[in-house]
Image 1 (cartoon, rainbow, N blue to C red):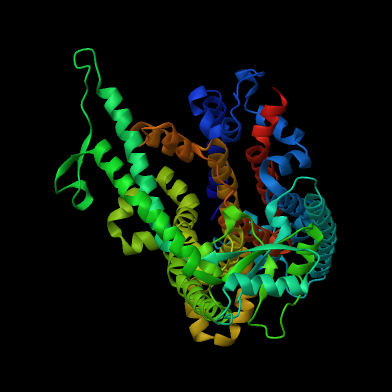
Image 2: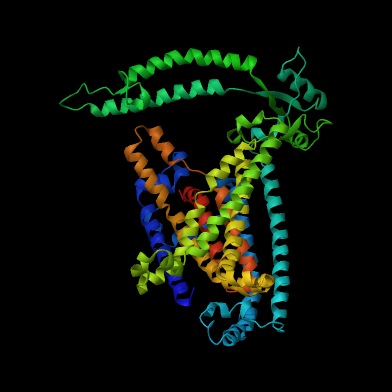
Length: 614
């Protein structure tokens, strides 16, 4: 990519970001959008506009609010996970800032004043003169072989390593203290007094699983054991309960529709009806309210009967054991409770809302087999996703498009269109392609038998990180090099090492644009929340009939750690790896993580700041 295309990409991304910030400023002031921008306040029954002026939501006002929020505020609003994530962003920002203070003023002049690229072009009689840009002149590739200037790059590697280790050490201490403070708070949480027990052995014939768990833990912890709760197979009972809840929702919606149908000319209104056949398209037409009430009366006794059967006959080999002290539960979660590793597996209990109940009863051997199968699937997914990624890297260039799709020549030969396509086409194709993966990885992680939702998110994030590093970082870097020099590799296979060493710095321009596009456009969309806003208004207009439906439409969620953290780690990998090869990437990394820190803190803490101003 030439310098004109790069600047065009950067300026266009910046303009888009400014527009999105202005859109956010305008939309966040409108009361009808409060459920999207202030969901936590509404859940507490508070008015987002009470005690504050809507005019304070200026294009830079959100920055001031984010900066004024303390770590205690963040923990109170978003939890420890959100605070640790912000520490991660600030730690990476510190690494890049301290590294850039030395690398930028030292390495840029060292590389820019050499002439290895020009000499290489001269040796080829000028044929290679257009194969490098001004950006590549400021990278390691412009330094001649065996030059004493290489010492500057070598010493810079040690400087970046030292800064990274030091900042990570400080951050580790910070997170440890933060977690200890959160665990020692006076707020009582039930999971802090409990442990999760899996792989409970089959009890003797005269005992139930609950009796076995109670007697075992009472013998090991006689002074601190309180009680146990055995996990049940409540699949059938849940199905009946969900059916009852579905009928209740239908009644609530039907009553709203019935009330809206009453007019002055027709005060009796029209009762809603529906068909009871396949998908409501065929079958007998019935009165919705009467039919659903009859079904509830029919299902309630079935639910009560199934609950009794579940408690009596469907105990599973897992339990949650409660203690009378936090310290006892913490000690038990770190203690080996049996000589055989496949029995009495004990771990810290998750929050009740995070437990994946269907996974608790899975035995250790089943979990291990599932884990092997899942990681095999992930391995093949990662490896074979590289084929289309490499194809995108090689084919999403204007030259390849003109060659493979001749009918596009008329379009791509236009100067203005050519500049925009050359700046954005490869990056947009890559970003869209990656958006298809997270749901698959979350599904596979749950199949492993992981007991809690947060651990599932962490497992999915790890898999996604492996994927983006292997396919995006290595795939784009090595794949583009291999495709552009395929003839050289075939004629001289031994020269691949030197070819990669000389050509890898050229991929820095791609990643410069990739990072710029992600932090300007990506963070702009996140700040403006346009997509959630559109989805919310569509749901409210066409799907929501009751207040519960509206609340479900704007219920707040987490920050999406399963994709957010791996994507941030990808940028960390790219920027750190290219920080010495092409130091110009460091300012873009600083911009990415500083803007990411501000927006993430705004998303987490803005509701609390509004509350403190009341």
